[in-house]
Picture 1 (cartoon, rainbow, N blue to C red):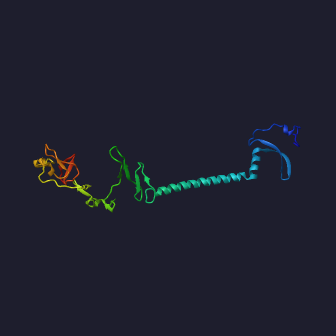
Picture 2 (cartoon, rainbow, N blue to C red):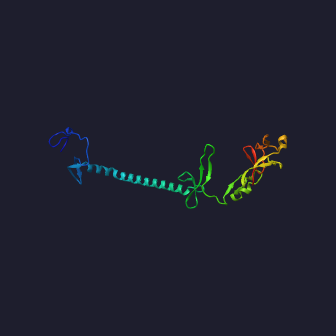
Picture 3 (cartoon, rainbow, N blue to C red):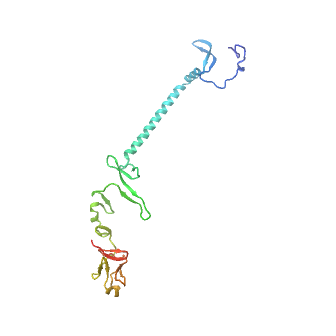
Length: 241
């Protein structure tokens, strides 16, 4: 093959053009190697490999693959480190909040997480409340405006100007006004009944009390607290400690 024609005299420009080649296809060309120039068949794969080596393509691909693998490994390690950091801080002071499978607050006991606090859902008649899931011992304390009070001392601490114990130990807010049940009131069952003198002269009743004129049953409007009594739907009843 010489000039612009094939050995048979066909112009090279007249030869059909290939629309695609594969690695196993062969090109025909003149190759000078080691001082010798000759026509040779050149597989496309060999030509591509030579071009790749000449421009350093193989090294660039290898370097890119290595860099990608390194970046992936670093990202995986960073994710693992972050997860380990969060897990190490879950439920601990200055750490992050931890929830158990039911959404309850969990705190560490030094070794594992313990479900410690939950929310009792609100109902149509009651607001949502907090409920401890761990048993409180006597060393547990309740925080008040003035100080922290141990549970074992709570009943005593609340016996001040604002609270009192009634009905066998229940702690209730101390009412703003207290009174004394007249000594001549009778008790029918546990219902207070006033004598006839109060029926004819109701103004002599202590403040907060009134009478059922037919029965003499003593009624209370709840504005005054009478020790050792209970307001039973407006009826003054006696209770025993």
